Amino acid sequence: MDLNSDSPVPKYAQIADIFRQRIARGIWAQGLRLPANEELAAEFGVSRVTIRQAVDLLSREGVIEAQQGRGTFVTGHIRQDRWLKVETTLTDLAEVYRDTSPEILNISEGQADAPLLPEDGRPAERYVFMRRVHSRNKQPYCVISIYLDERIFRRSPKRFRKETVIPILKDMRDPAIASARQTLTIGTADLEASKLLQIPLNSPVAEVRRVFATADRTVIYLGEVTYRGDFIRIDMDLKP
Image 1: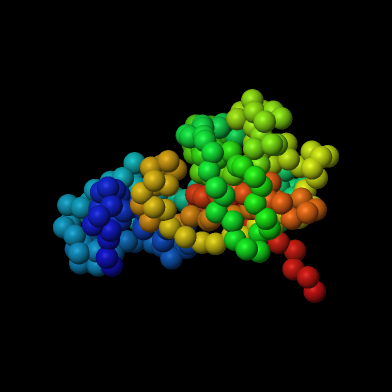
Image 2 (image 1 turned 90 degrees about the vertical axis):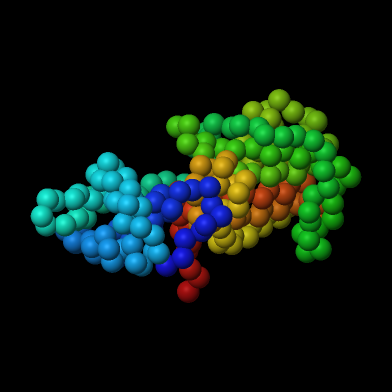
């Protein structure tokens, strides 16, 4: 199995992450004896020292245990912390942001053209651009690029800078949101996202693009969000 040689994440940490995924998915069930270090070293094309470092890392986490004369066994479970639900209605989405009350770190702010698609609607005259990180208990879980109609931003700049934007927009009467659409794709973390979200380079991420428009099809909000893949879940009702 090929590892990412260009990643700043050490190879032993990349291997430990692969081990975690195998345990989380049940490929390595609790009580299973892991393959010998020599076999794992051959699989990943690394030295036995690197494999021992990966094993030691998971041993300290209490996930596996090396038993003298018997081998290394899976002894624990990987904690599943997919607490963040990506809702599929605007009302529910606004409530999620109200309920989670994330810690907000503003990275940058300025004016920029929104990267709109023809089907999104027509652009507002000017947009305020905000780049921010949302965290919970000091742990970052998403990076957001926001393009907000400047006329709306100027109404309450302090709130828009300190609070989550979607609940504020949802409560507006003028202009009201007439259409709201979001698209979700699965991707991998680039160098910036991996640093901001504190995850290995090329880790799975969910990329969500949200567009809110008024009745005359003016786009007042564009949000491009990158979520940690190990934090989110999506529940959808399927139409019969």
